[in-house]
Length: 196
Image 1: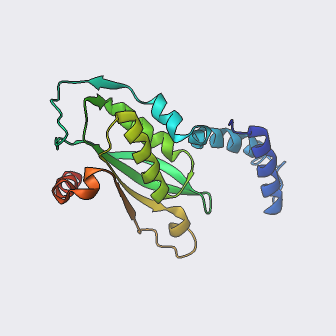
Image 2: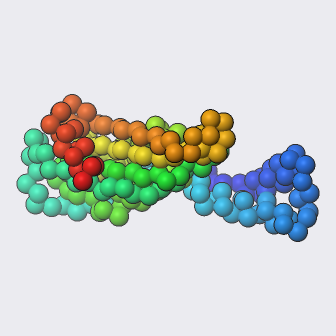
Image 3: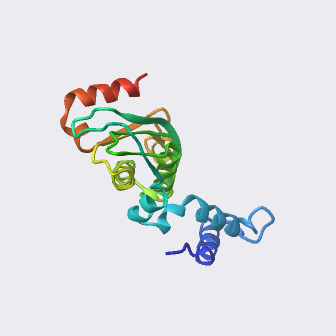
């Protein structure tokens, strides 16, 4: 599904009128087009399913990790900066970082692919909780591992700039799959790595 830039332009123009402004004045006359271009970029992930994102970024390398079914070797990429938009207010979720860990099976995923997965999953109208689920699902398919952990920290402008106006509030979500969900020892190692 492609993003309909012409429809976005039309609706942004209508919003400007509804706000009581003149969409033809100098500062606003190109705003609908600029917003449509911005939306095409920041919502790019809406064009793809989780399965399609996994297929785009599944570049992995067979390795002699000597991985066994009980291996507890963790690969983690920490503090990946992303941004997203809350689906409730279309408000920016910012200062957002994602940490992703997985236990490789017989192959390792290219590290840049992990960051790209996080980025693409965030480029949707999202809930922070769903973003963690989406990244875990994509990581499981792309890496071939069922042992996935996703920890996200973020500030939500729908809480910081309006409503309750708590600008220093940070939301933290965790999504644990496989042995990260069931093995307390692995959980402890995971949280130690996060806090290093």
